Length: 312
Image 1 (cartoon, rainbow, N blue to C red):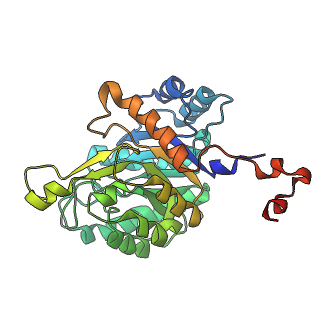
Image 2: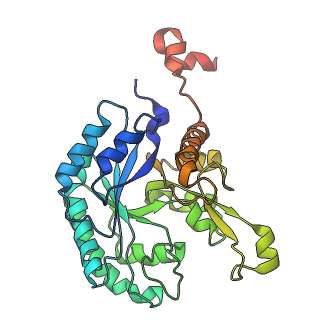
Image 3: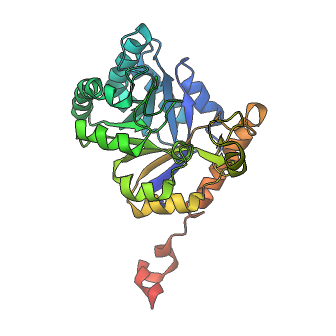
């Protein structure tokens, strides 16, 4: 039977901008990851995405690994050359997601640079209303990562989807059913927002989840505040930060989330460089345990396959 535990899969992100996504997948495919999110940074570099998707699936082979999301990260709202490449990249990812087996494309909303967040809403509505329709015609969902990229309400360069107040404004401008979020607790914790209540309110808009955590240094905050010289928060690989992912995954299950939690590595200040994959595999196993551990098939334990017998 299908493993019900894997209605939430645990995987990792794979760099795809340089054309090495299949090779990157093949290098770590036997480490136990259950899903991959190939992602592009600002541009696809003119790659044939249909061919790249085919090669990525070939690299997976007959392993029980899926790709349900691909990423396109940049600023599609502005009009510099790289911004135009990002916008075209979104269109190409939407059109070719099915070649990867994906049903979601994720990334930043973009932002009108160096302006208050609300100044981006007209351009946001213009661009994303068109992309939402394009995606709906392809059976694709759009998910915005909740990363501030060092921006805030007053100014920024990349993304407006980093704050629940902004989500209210965005989804009012684009009420499309196929526009939602690529959520993770880390990016809320850097704002000192409690992520667990947020799941209860917003999980219906979670189309993809990133596995990234944070460590908040409360002693630094109490002595130096959050705008001083001392760093008050670190982004962490799951299992090394402050979040209890058993609670996170329980809340996701209670809310009906089905999809992947793909680890976003390369941020942890300790488990990086030569220790990067050590940290990621530890996170993989930690998240699998937080998901409930090994699946036990109740039906197979009782004669006649009647699990109601276990309740008597």
